[in-house]
Length: 208
Image (cartoon, rainbow, N blue to C red; front, side, top):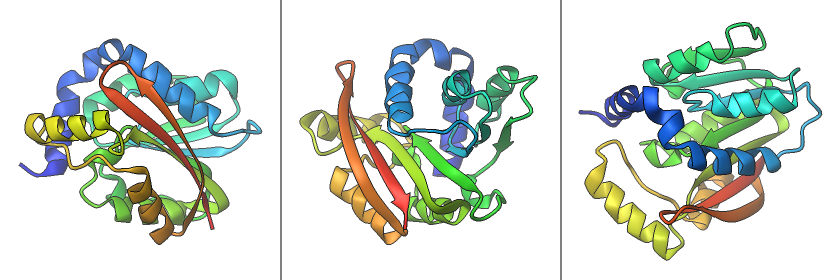
């Protein structure tokens, strides 16, 4: 089974309980992502791997005039996301592989990639495509696990054994290199933890 199909299958299976079982994790990671970006309130936002739309919900609650496009590969996760925004014309969702979805270039003010970099077989291609869709000076916020810690190294080992959809957890320097090769300038990196298992980082980069 290919990685893309494994990811879709995994999240289709857990979609109905995802918000419940990961409530604490979602709260902390989304808070970190939102705090990393100062918004005027009228920006166009791209969410890569949007899942059940929890980031969208947090962003819209604070800035209801935002225009948000969420992309995800899981049909069942997106079904839940769409139900949260039945009457919100400014929040839309597209299903499919991000690399194959047509989006306008130089359109978005900011993009988010939350807790999914470790699933991408070709992260360089993801970042390069994201760069194309951002306006000049647009921001990319990546929140993901951090292999530069003991927890991160152990979790990377565990996930390789436990999850067929998993690819790799990155270090701060590895992510910085990927970003720089994709036309981004890293502005800041913040570190935080979630529970006993996850050592996290929040990376903010700007399109050069």
